[in-house]
Image (cartoon, rainbow, N blue to C red; front, side, top):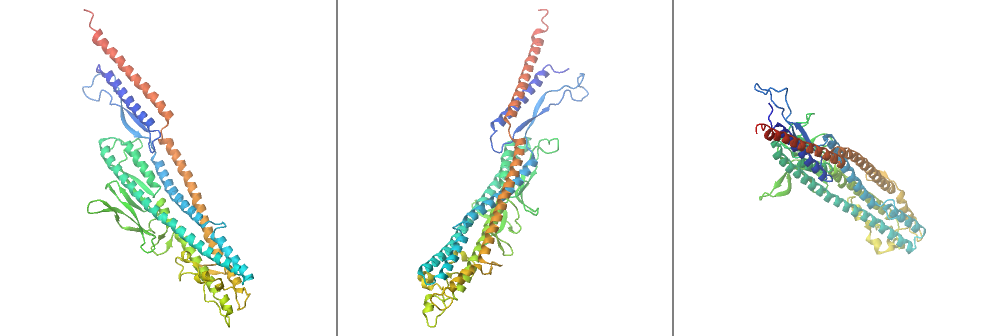
Length: 529
């Protein structure tokens, strides 16, 4: 027959299981606003029925239940939504960073506006036309000189400011690399802790949450894939075959062509850190090194990373880091220099060099005041703008020539050796409309600049649009993820009441069994007393 105390054991197990469920419910409520927390659930399991199949089993009508146990405490989380969220987070990280870089560029270029380069050059052309009407007027000459100074200073300002923002992007790349490496080491550290817990048959849910939060943060910086590596001693799998224990994470950097590079190895328990390498001459990004950090004689980590460099052509991953590289500038294996700020600075240099060179050619064909006074009159030998011999750095080097700054008489306004002639001033004003070879294109100076500004505007609009789309998609996935994983206080309060009633009922059952036992022990066999 069944043991007299069988009822006590069944009720005790019921109380213990419901008590565990109440503790888990309380933990959910406590962490309702904790970032990265995933709600947990107790999986109740029936204990083994009595009696087991055997030759000497008691002769009772059938097997009887022996109660319940809290089989496991698991997180309620959907892995597919995590993958979707991280994919959208990678795209958002790329486009947000790109939109921010382009917004800063637009602020520097300041077009269209009265203070932009286009407006300053228009004022310069207009001052030359005014000079062609009054070539002997010192006031008109002074205006031309001052407008020329404004053009040169605007080129200088735009170039230096763009280089300043570019330098900020370089620093941001360094910060992002440090953040990536820090996240990788934290994930690897949690991997080790998970490997210490799981072999004992327990689920370290809090460690899982911490690790997933770090992976979410990492996904905005680089495009990654996540794989689970079992560590042994894993609890039973779910009904669909998915293991409840996640094991160690292996994190891989994924390129656009599908190739991957290991960053965190779950099987080898190691980390490959990232280092961005700059070309020593151009100071542009030329490769990425993924490998282990070099340590000094004392065992302390250095800034060096030992590994095979990956050319920037092969680093086609998305995320914030790639966006920063695209904005700052990079040098391909062919030697070609690309990037938002690199290309804009090059366009400015090409424009400044072509403009100054063509303007100087026309200026030296005219006659200044001193040349007209000569017998016979002689053309000027002075340039209007001083500029280097190549386009490299021209926007930062362009300046009004020292001879023009020294004397207004050195402005060559005449095309003939006659006082009162303003033909060359008019020809100088017409340089605006001359079709020239600028940066490999055939166009006027104005058209070339408008094209550069237009391209920047289109790129900025695209980045803002894509960032907005990515944000909407990420938010949509996050809402679905939260609907599965976040803590609902209403639901937890309902569960608390449900488990409390079950606990009270189990306690009442113990009281009932106690009364039965009291009757047997103290109330039976007293008839002869």
